[in-house]
Every structure is written in C-alpha cells, then in structure tokens.
Image (cartoon, rainbow, N blue to C red; front, side, top):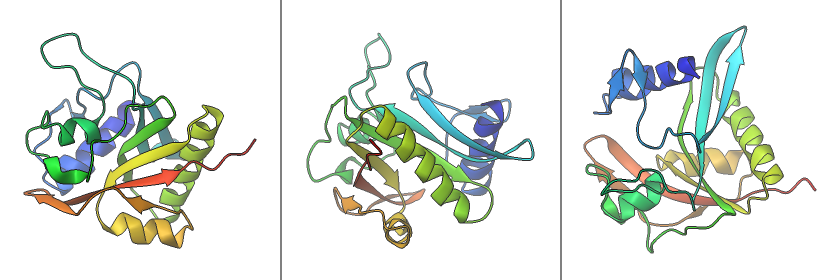
Length: 175
C-alpha cells in the first residue's frame, strides 16, 4: 500500500505537477480511508499500478465537512480546484454504484486492462452494478479499445491540471 501511495506521488505530483497533499513521498487524501478498497498491481515485488475504489453511499469524516466520494463532492463544490460541472446531474449515492479514482500505471498499457479486469471482478463479487470513473477524455478511447461500454456523464471540464471527464460503465457479472 505504501508503494502504491508513493507511485501516486511520483505520477500525480512529481510528473503531472498536480498540487496534491503529500508527505514522506506519499500522496494521500480524505478519500484514502478505512472504507476504501485498493487494487494494486505488482511485478517482481515492485508496485507498477493501482486504483482506488469507494462505494458511492459511504461518508467519511464527522466534522463540518463530510465527504462522500470525489466525483460527487466535486459536483457539490466541496473540492476546491476540481470543476463543479463534471456531471450533467448530481451523481448518485447508491450501494451498488462505486467510484474508481487515482488509477495509476507505471508500465505498458496492458496493465490498465489488467487492473480494470481485477476491479470489475472485485466489484462483481461485491454486487456492484455500475462504476464511475474520473479521468482524462482519452479514457473513453482506451475503454473502447478494451470493449468497455462507457457512457459520458457530463462535459469535458478543465482546470489548471488538465481536462477531466466522468464516465459510467456497467460492471460485468460473472455469476
């Protein structure tokens, strides 16, 4: 887990220059909590990729600001810096809908496919129906090349870190 957080810092903070919180070479935030699930890929003992998963009906925090999940919180204006107009309507809070964020790969494109396949398998086992993904507009092309039937939930939104889009994809059932 530590190495996954280090890889996130290397990619998102060091390489992409995103102004994200980091400490001791680790990038982490309020969505990295005890009710978050991670899919982490390693090769020969080295972490080469991963993704963070959260059910969309979960709440973190007990203070003045309580967090649900990144996409919804951005749309509600809770996350300064992320565009509010990511979705055409407010994203759901639903135990069968999950969010995938902080997907990172340090290696060949085939790692994306492997991580997404593991994410899908896990979500299928958890009874998930849908997964939401916050990423670059290029994700739609990549998902299409993997035969993932993604649907855009809103327009391309931009800030100083780049362009973002929210996608929805059905979870393939293996039952």
